[in-house]
Image (cartoon, rainbow, N blue to C red; front, side, top):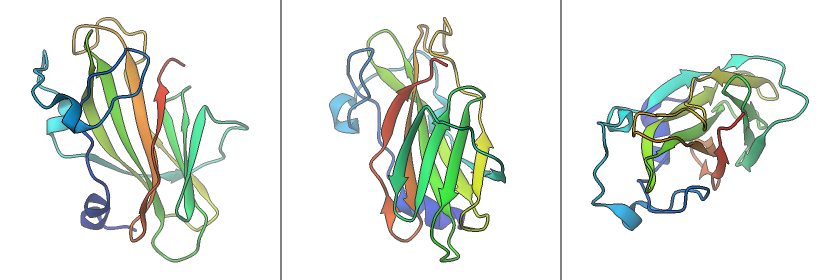
Length: 168
């Protein structure tokens, strides 16, 4: 099992951004002075979940390959799937963040990790509940929900993230 401190040390938090409703949030430097309508959950410690073994669907909504693994998102059921492809004893994890649209920009709502400490070659998933893209209003008073997901190895680091709207 990958230690929480080791996972936290690998992943850098990316802050809110000013961007068009359909685009992914940019870096934290883009909007450091924004004021949210509510206190976001993201100010809390990241959520840490252990993946449970499962049979993945025949296709995913989006995936990213990372160092020694793969991380995917299944919109139906809000499941984050993780596969460790290298038997090095470290496991593999997905780093995720959930962003909500406030009418002007994407705001970080919550973030966390889905750790696959199962045997290499075994898919595992974390069952999450994210706001749907069409939920109106969301906690920021508007509608829109998206996810950033990266695929990570605790010693090597993380892949680039993919951005997906949670409209499934």
